[in-house]
Amino acid sequence: MKSFFERYSFYSFRMLIDQVAIAIFGLVLSMATNKFPTLRLICTIGAILFYLFLLYLVGWEIGSKDRMSADLGKITYRPVTGLLVSLLANSINILFALFVTCGLVLNVYVLGRIGAVGALLGEGMYTGLLALKIGETPLNEFWFMYFIIILPALLISTVSYILGYHNVMFTGLMKPQYPASDRPGKKDKENENREGKQ
Image 1: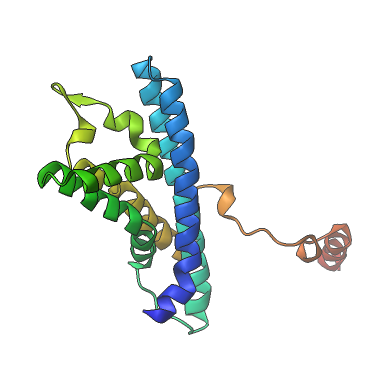
Image 2 (image 1 turned 90 degrees about the vertical axis):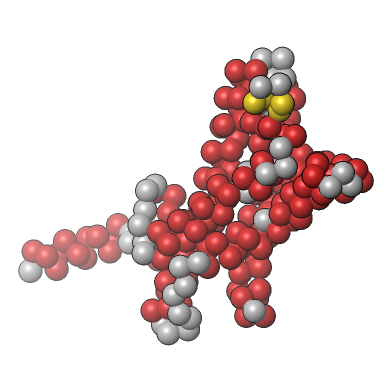
C-alpha cells in the first residue's frame, strides 16, 4: 500500500487538480447559460468530455511508464492500476456522495448540505446534467446520481491505463516528446543518406 501511494499519489493529485479546474469551468458555463437549457446542456457535455479527455491523458501516461518499469522487471502488470489511482483521486467525491445520501435518505440535513455544496464545487461540470428532470424532479435530488457521475472517470482511467500500457494511441498527444538534443538533426539525416548510398 505504501509503495502504491509513493508511486501513484502524484497522478491522483493531478487528476484531482484537473477535476477541480474543469469543475469551476463547467460551473461558470452552467451559470452563464442558465436561461438557455439547450445551450447549457451542450456546454455541460463539452466540459464533461474535456474532463474525461484530461483523465485519459493522465491514465495513458501512467500505463506507458508502468510498461517501461515492467519491462525492466521493477513492477508487475496490474490492469486495475488505473482504476485504483482514479478511486484515490475520487475519494473526496465518494465522500460527498455519501454525505448527500445521508441528507436525502436519512434526513441528516447538515451532511446533506455539505455534500451538495462539495459536489457542486468538485463536480461542477455535471451541473447542467444534474439539472435535467425526470417528471418534476431534477436529477440532483436523486442520491444515486452522485455515485453515477463518478463512474465515467473510473472507467476512462481504467481503459486509458490499459491502452497506455499496451502503447495503443488514438492521438498524437500520446507520442513521447524528446528533448531537442535527442532528436535526429539535419547532419544525422545526411549521414544516414550517405551510409545508405554506400
